[in-house]
Image (cartoon, rainbow, N blue to C red; front, side, top):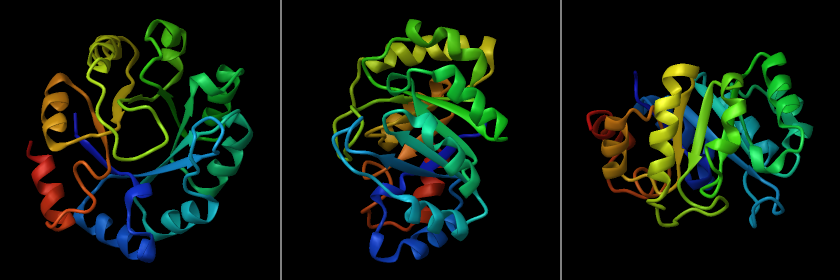
Amino acid sequence: MQKLLCPSMMCADFSNLEQEVHNLDEAGFEIFHMDIMDGHFVPNFGMGLQDFELVRKSTKKLVDVHLMIQDPGRYVDQFADLGADIIYVHVEADQQITRTLGRIREKGKKVGIAINPGTSVESIKVLLPLVDYIMVMTVNPGFAGQKYLDFVDTKMDELLTLSTQYGYQLMVDGAISPEKIEKLSRKGVTGFVLGTSALFGKERSYREIYNNLKNL
């Protein structure tokens, strides 16, 4: 399956965000990843509606939205109507998770769930038939620049085994270095959210980085 490389736009240069989108688009990256945080579910504030709208209008590529917010179901319609292609919600933040996942599907969007490092596979097993993507957080969500938590690899192995039955794609987010991309893609992980560990703040061009990561 094709490797999906997804720039985390929270890490981009906000002094010229539109140009950043253009450069990443031209380099070949497949999905633009947008983190929305509320300062409540995670102890930080992330990108806002205007940032999302700017990225969405600046590319024809897929744009996902990662709702790191309490009660994400309240915002599904809003982001779907703004043009999100994939909507991730956290199972830990939603008391009516099946209703929320159903609403994403009703809006014609791809359904994603995100799970924190401490969330077990067993606790989400009932949801697996309902989703297109599962995003495993390999750091505690909310801040860039954290260290990869190796214990989540066991959880990824479980989810990869189950993916053959349920047909979802497995994504990873958090401290994803080129070494991790090489290792995890060999296991069968499909998608990689890229921040400062592999993409942003480097001396090489985005195109060079994209080509290198694709060939790992």
